[in-house]
Amino acid sequence: MTTQQPVEQAAAEAVAAARQSEQFALVLAAVQAAQIVQQQQPQPPACQHHHAPQPSQPVGKWIAVGVAGSVAAISLALSAIAVAVGAVAVTCCLLVLRSMWRDIQGR
Image (tube, rainbow, N blue to C red; front, side, top):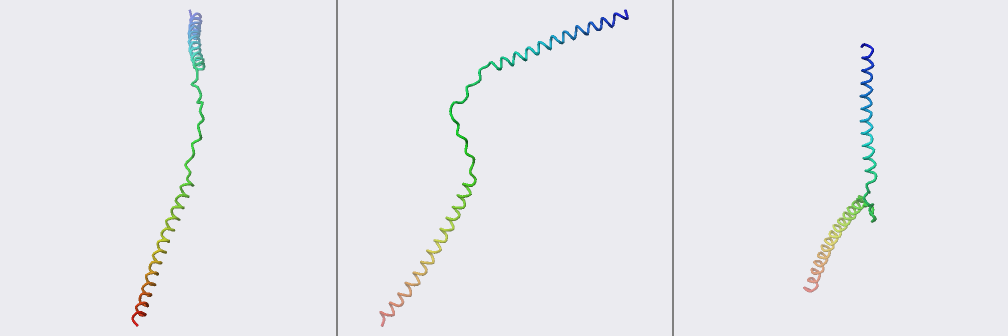
């Protein structure tokens, strides 16, 4: 019995390995079948209309708008100062002319 025990044990292991091989073959066949089914499924149709590329946010554009706005604000402030200086000059001129007119009329 000592010689048959290892032979019987080896035979049992061979049968178990054959069963595992069959199970592995079944699992492999199932995975391959799933891949084939997935490949055969119709793909959704591709988009037929043209997508225009999305423009990136133009940072330079906003910088230019900021600079132009600043220049316009400074120009407006300087023109307001010029108008004020002109108004003061006209007022002084009118006062001087009125004073001169009164002097001429009084004599």
